[in-house]
Image (cartoon, rainbow over all chains, first blue to last red):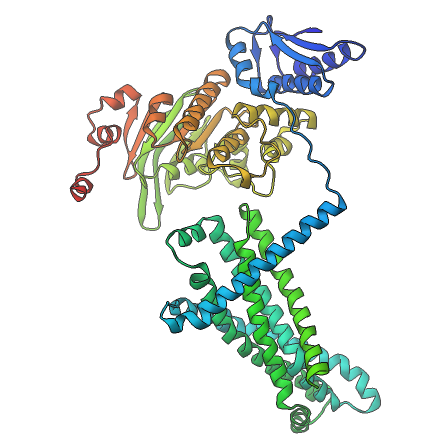
Length: 358
Length: 250
């Protein structure tokens, strides 16, 4: 089927060309040949419609050819020729449930191996290598202490204070009905020392520090800074992970302790000003409610949370692919994994403290 | 078509451009050259409305873009194409969607034509099969070419191109030069190109502007540049190091 192209091939005449091609090959015809012998000019949209005719021919399995082009039109057709000849890409085979499960299983296994390797290397470069004289970046460690610790005190205090206030408010509404308002002090004290301060602080640190670690390392990976480090024979865990890990191992328990004080203060504000309990009585009740083991539960958990937050942040940062989009995805993934891991670890500690040790 | 007059700009206390003046004619390939840090990319950013100068005028088809507000500059920018040094592709979209973006935003064209235009533009830059790839999967040269495909999506009369050949192998770089020449010849696109690749300059330039320490020290054709009496211009084309650097090398 020969189709004569118009003198000027633009948006309108190109659209008509496609319509003509469709109409003329609807009933019969095994080929489309475009005749450019009368065409004197083509603009970009006209050229795009020629590509659309070629696509149509390919879709209907018709042969496609062109002829008669001269002068500038010939040059233009030569320029767009790859677009006329290009074959559509093969559609990917749909994934079955088994292949999806298999791929997910392999990915989880590979990630677990990578994380285990990173954990071992980080512990070595944090706790062993400095004593072997292999170097530790104390300057960066000091900066991290300031960034992760000092600069997080305010937000951590406020979050725990408000949580303490809320817990006191909600529990008082129940306990007051039985005349047990003073036991709100016990509830807040035990809740914060064993559980809430550690959890709330870990969530704050995950959102603040964990996300920052993932974004920093991911950006470094994208900008080939990580490759540059490796290219100089430097160890990534030594250079980047160890100072962060040691800093958070110190900072996280400190912030958890501050969180405990803030939570108790929040609860006390409600107890003293709303429940009208004497401050001395509130403090005495709180002191009698708690034993050292309750505080140590919260502190031990905070150490585990610190390791997990640094490890997950670094792991996700180093796994980034692509550019800015990848950085965003890995930062989000890091925070989601942090919070999931925090809840799972908390549950495991609860099992340990209440069913194994007790 | 485009006229720059007495352009002065500062980064903090440092004067980056110092009274630069020149004019670009319709349909020419105008190449801006100069050593690293001489203000080439800054000048390009001023001409595309991405940066405001300290003083001076930049006239695009009779309109001084220095005096325009953000909305008015956006209107001017819709009629120019900008191809960035690293492509400037959006990493969250496929290459095809990157090229289609200006068509969908401003082109007011139906999806059949958008798809055909995307395939056409990508074919023009030799990336016919790359529409479904993500930018992260492309090499440096492919990213530059994809960036050019996006820049020509709306068929702008002017394209600004920052370092088209930098970091590319000679075969790809030469292909990109041919593409610029073809687009200039067949579509009449005016190119304003920042580069310091001598082979590219020799192959594509109609006229050359040379910047040195923020000043325009030469404007003219390639032949005039090669026979220039300005020492810095000759040094550039003869690839001679500065005296100080040459002594350090000895």
